[in-house]
Image 1 (cartoon, rainbow, N blue to C red):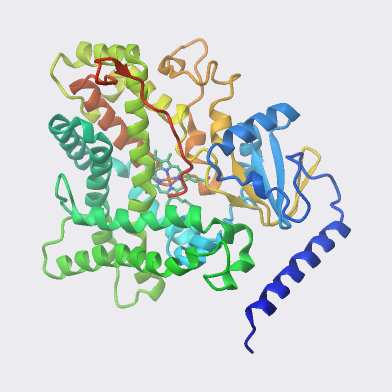
Image 2: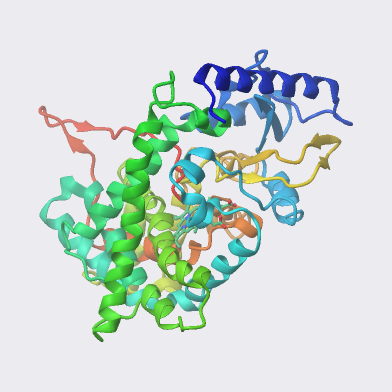
Length: 483
Ligand code: HEM
């Protein structure tokens, strides 16, 4: 049966209205958590969680109404924002058996087909469990030590690139993370300045950011996915196929290259090589597909987040010269002037470690996390949270809670050293419960070796304008949903 577009539109509208009416009649057994007032029909459309700065808005709103848990509604969909570590732990960690699903974000999961091979979008279930288990074989704390030489080499290359063209530090930092990650995931030695593999993968990943902004409407008004691309507001649908293909190519080209290299006995050790080698004639199609898809998750999960952490560190150093001075003094006193720190020096450099934690706390890289999905009705602190709610943890609010981190907007690494009032580690930056970031141990090491080398080798100063006056750096952060 075929429908005209008008029929489709009318049917969708009718189903929304029916749904809303049903919602009105089915009163929840207890009140929903408090939240911003919505408009009729569209609910909180104007308060969407991945608008820039929405984490600040939710943090303030929670403070104003005295609740660490907020509720929003959009076309009958329930969204819950957790503003405290306690609420996040109580729900996402302690009740993780019902809070570990992911919303099937139409734009990414369906239009770009990431729902079938990007771990972040997998529903909670056996496929997610198999892929996560396979990932941890390579990324658990003891295992990631084997990547130290690769991470050290990439960090040293960054120093050399920065020496040549310091003004390109944004590009160089991304290149450094790409270099380390492609070596770990695929065994590739990349061109130290401009690598085609990095360029191709980054170009493909751009599709995710574009989809998040231009195609976000599909996540909240899912029935629009059935409308033609020329329908107002959904022009992204026309480009989605191109992005989908690019993403598949960025997954398949490196995989095929490793397979070929293994057949010709010239493959370097890597996660992809090890997974392909473990395949046999008895392997299921799903296991073969996992070997193809999982290594790409390591690149996609790590590139934006780890790069942003290093860039956020540079910003902090420019804004807080006294911190870089103290860190450099620590390095010089422990290693002697002119030596670059190695991983073995970590314990002897506590201030440097504290800078790493403060970087992750000061500007959490995913300030509203990656949403979880609740699979059963739940009650928390007398509030009703219906099954199907999207749960956002506001890691920005958690890591800027002044009772845990006094003067939270200041970059103060010493908060992690003070023996009398030591602040808790900024674990919230990596999420909660069963969906916590599996790449966190790898990321911590990459960022540490990078910032250690940069502090030992360089001084970070603000740019100078035409009159020789220092120009304070702009501070602007956007929501990342790349993991
Ligand atoms: C500083 C760097 C990083 C930060 C701040 C970060 C942060 C996060 C956050 C907040 C989540 C969502 C957790 C949750 O839902 O509770 C996540 C998930 C994820 N991260 Fe990371 N991440 C980083 C680096 C990495 C790296 C290096 C990898 C590479 C392996 C990675 C791979 C992933 C994957 C695959 C997921 C999805 C897990 C799932 O849905 O089960 N991340 N990350």
